[in-house]
Amino acid sequence: MLLSATTHDRIHEEISHYPNPRGALLFALHQARDELGRLGRDAYAEVAAIFGMRAGEVAEVASFYSLFTQPTGRAVFQVCTNLPCCLRGAREIVELLEDRIGSKAGTTSPDGRFAISEVECLGSCGTAPVVQINRNPFLENVTPESIAELTSAPEAAIAAQRPAPIISIIPDVVDGYLLPPNGASWLTIDDYRANGGYQAVVKAGQMTPKDIANLVKDAGLRGRGGAGFVTGLKWTFMPPKDDRPRYLAVNADESEPGTFKDRQVMERNPHLMLEGIMIASMAIEANAAFIYIRGEYIVGYQSVRDAIADAYRVGILGETALGFGRRFDIHIQPGAGAYICGEESGMLESMEGRKGQPRKRPPFPAQKGLWGQPTTVDNAETVAHVPAIIIRGAEWFKGEGVEKAAGHTLFGVSGHVKRPGVFELKLGVKLRDLIFEYAGGLEEGRTVKAVIPGGVSMPVLRGDQIDIAMDHESLRKVNTLLGTGGVIVMDDRTCTVRAALVIARFFEHESCGQCTQCREGTGWLYRVLGRIERGEGRPEDLATIVDTADYLEAKCICALSDAAAWAASNFLRQFRAEFEAHINEHRCPLPESFRI
Image 1 (cartoon, helix red, strand yellow):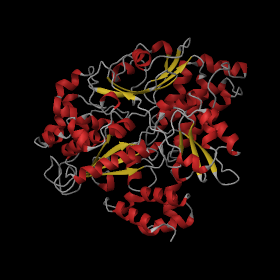
Image 2 (image 1 turned 30 degrees about the vertical axis):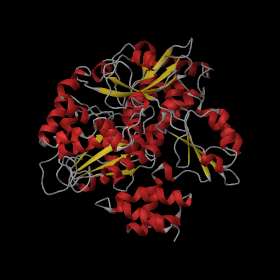
Image 3 (image 1 turned 90 degrees about the vertical axis):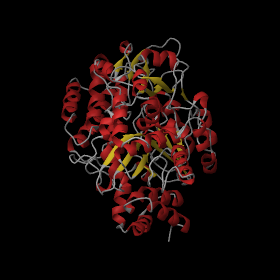
Image 4 (image 1 turned 90 degrees about the horizontal axis):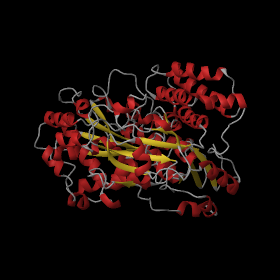
């Protein structure tokens, strides 16, 4: 037996939380890799025996996820090299690590002590560049000076710890309700209750499910995960209650570059999310809720897991849950590094212990979701708004935003700004104010060249378009979308061809491969953009980008292909002259741009 009795006990305890044992499969694979340092045939066989599966089935699932397929080494440096980190010097960090370790990224050092893995996003864009060593908490704002110490010995790298900087704030002009004020963290039930926590779930418990859903719908809360659908309306899509179990699935995967807001709620105010989950579950009459959190969020996972354990300890969850008068359960599941699992049906597949490949629809999750049962999927930040709506009412919430975009949101700002971070602000704030007033503006003498307003899947804006309100309808007027509110700012030194290339690499890497158009088209965009960036492009390549984007958009099971198309085609549309200069001059005309 490779795995210890303690690890076997942990896995069996986790299995007890799910209606089907495979719900604990990713957890088990994490446990096996943590203990053994690698996954191989013997480990797959032992895990398979626990779940009554074949070793080949377990290996197939593991092969889908990047956290299970990294190079092995005593200390594995995972360096984010997506756009926000590249803008802040990630390439220099990779090269320093390669020099110190004596091996290239994607390989293990000859002595087996170190390995380097370039990863697409770690979800800490505001503290770029970011490094994660094994499954330890992030090392944020990594500097070249720190590399020598980190590479002195594997033990030094593994032991390296830094407190996460507080980068999420409530500006003085805002009466915040998502984040604790003044950099505080409310991690315990006592802290949360001392600040009004768990009053909303008691109030909701005195309402009917229909009344809860109608109140949230009337408030105008729209999903904060990217699609912006009306939350209360989504809740009404569940079928009438019958004898089948019903579930709420909470999406805390947050894997899109530029997006790092949900982590702030989970690490600083986890009970707020739990209370929102409980109220949402009342509205849909759910028996249980399952939170799917990205596998890299070590601190967030532990904060939420501890909060859940405390809620069971004091009786808020369990046999007679607070406000329910019946049993209600919440459990948390770790992902394993796959952006596609942020797509709701891909997430459901992953939660069931399979590869996270999106499902064809219909049926939709409300009819057939987790384990074939009626399921509603909500974003982590979305449910965190619900307690304030229950306490303060729909009219108050609508007054906190603008028409068709009610309430606050957590805007994440990264890239070329002086104070990157997460800001709790009312929807409708001007993009210019977000960049210059709250995020501190750019370096002296620099100007804004390009801004992505809502994570890398959203169409890019030019620097002369930033006098725009950050809400759904206003952004639609300039042919982009609010998305997750993850704002990436690029200054006048930035090569936009290079930026488009980095984003194309992300979508090519993260395509699940299920749809031919997406599998082939994302790779084609990446290769064509790479050729242009290297100065080897041809004039007809620009038409190829447009044609490929058209081939991708609205042609596949999920929206990853749409996002890849929007990113590439809109960089070309907004900055065509720069693309043409690369082709005509056979080089990048911006020597000061970030490196990739």
